[in-house]
Length: 116
Length: 113
Image (tube, rainbow over all chains, first blue to last red; front, side, top):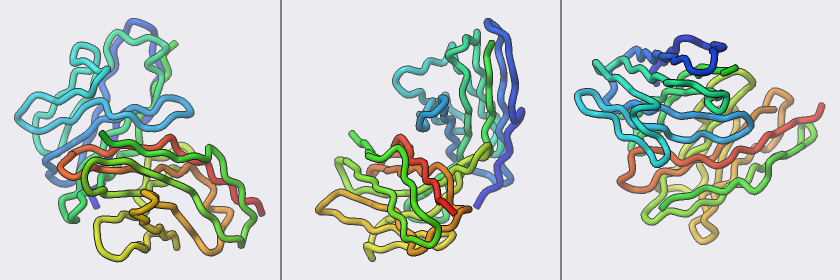
């Protein structure tokens, strides 16, 4: 399975500012995903990031609020823009494992964001 | 459309007893089903998956899950619970042809010494 790291692991930010979260994978992967896990809740997919194309956003998420970069096959960033306290969540990146038929996803350790 | 239901927010079990964490799903095609575990302050760890074939699948840490097509269920089981199994468990489904996983709301398992 891929080894995934995220930076920062946690941050406390002021309202109105932006934070960029980095996701690094130790192998080349086609598909990377960004999820949000709000306090006490399940994971919600924000967007799918493929290298060389625009990210695909899920309903309720827009590029202006959550711009994503995918410059190569091992790296992606998610920016949380113009933050409000409602953005306080754990943000996780994941990658698809192409070894198995069902292509399960493996997750990074997450970035815990608190917005004051 | 795909959906996953974990009807129990919390499951408590005594150490050494068998445990079951329930999951039901709804997909339009053939389901790919997954269980993940989340320990405190850590990311999600993959436990096991069902793709096709034998309805009973075995995964990490002694966990297993049984796929039941008629009941559209994929319950997670372990014959003898350990205190270290205490964590948050998520069931997830992936519909045929879909790229992303859809997660249930999670079940917090507490194993009592």
